[in-house]
Image (cartoon, rainbow, N blue to C red; front, top):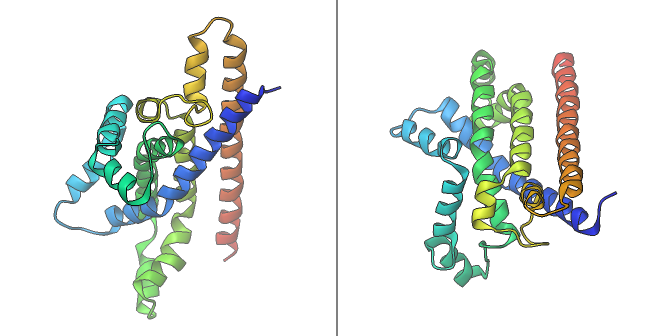
Length: 229
């Protein structure tokens, strides 16, 4: 059984991961399509910037976010003055950190899925008079959906397990920014914290496995529908 504090940690972690996933889903799909289907000056630079969080230490990414989104940072000051939004040491900062760290994984999965989509089918739809957006929605997107679902699940797992950038920008405030990985790390630092560590580790594994099972089920149903069509 979970204690009230551990239950609060679970709810907050799911809230952060789901919010981050929803926030980056459309931009991630759009960026994946852009990198897969378009050629433009500076494409290599855009690709490098998008994937930079994969190669930078998470703490470095968190520090850069802290500098940019802190109270005196250019983004943080504007958000606070115009909208009253605070990111540092807040669950919204944890959402930002998780989204930034998981975004490259989503973009990479979407890009590979779209690159593998049959372009002859897209050309056939365009020849029949379908507009580019309709071609994307009715041909490209269904063909790439298994890869997109895999990217979404991978991104969700990354959001759920994000630690370095989260603790740098959001800290470890109970009820505000203490997510599962942050709480696990903290419980390893205190005496008699092993029981809580084990419960939270098992909880993380259960949530991650459940996400994979749901993804596999959705992929199979989608594959069956595409096969029937």
